[in-house]
Amino acid sequence: MHGDDDDDDADDDVAAWAPMREPARGQRVGRYVIEGLIGHGSWGVVMRARDPTKARTVALRLLHPRGLRVATADARAALRRDLEVALALRHPNLVSAHELGAWEKTVYIAMDHVDGPSLDDWLRADEHDWRVIVAKLVGAAAGLSAAHERGALHLGFTLRSALLERDGRARVKDIGMVPRAPDPGLGVLWSAPSCMPPEQFTSGAPVDARSDQFGFCAALWYALCGQRPYGDDDALSICRRALDGALLEPRAPRAPAAVLDVLRRGLAPDAARRWPDMRALIERIEAAARARGCVARGRG
Image (cartoon, rainbow, N blue to C red; front, top):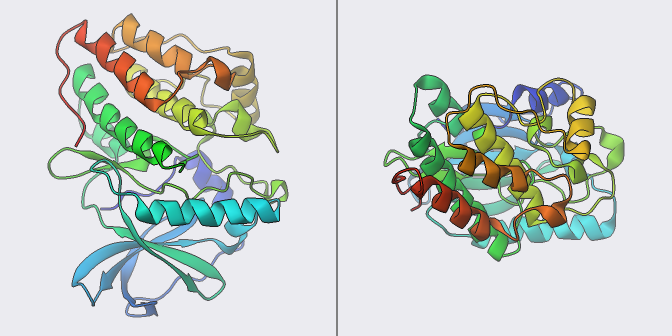
């Protein structure tokens, strides 16, 4: 499967939007022939489709028309640039995008179809040693780092944002698809609140690669501790705790304190206090993990 976004928190927001029309099985969207529905998310819908020109299956994401509404003309241009950058990204830990096109009142992005579980599904399916969990997430971090180096952001990273290939490699999807400055009138959260940095809760606040770092650290914290760093209740309460830096201490962490200490810095409410970039974060996570025994390599 091509695991879809997002945590239940984000899915709840979709219900408040007018339903978008989904293409029917057999219908063409651009050159792609629709084979079925993969899933819904706060961005829109994802369809499985066939590319007859290259005899391959793709995941076709159709963005909800309201999701294309952003606050300013500059923000619209930035969203377009982010999507175009995403098309050029190629990295073993990223799901490649192949084409950006228009369909009816929205746009679609054709991407690799990954026939594997999301990291969230993988974690729920079985017990895993903390070193293996770290290795998988470090692979996802390498993908985010590659995107950042090209100027692209994710801005919605959760454990459902990375899919596992058959070789065990994690690949991050949906780079560049969240507006950096969405229209505040939409009232939509673009990620699970538990993985959103404080700056994404605040209208007009700047976002950058350190925003993705927060989301990544929140996801890895949950994978290792079984609880959200700033809670999992309503979005307002999570936002307040995140702004205050009131991180909830883990009750039964799987990983050593040295690894969690690295994540604490990445979860700082002030972006300036987080790690300089994803590369620095990866290096510190791997160093902390090596101090407690070898960690399997998770990068492509």
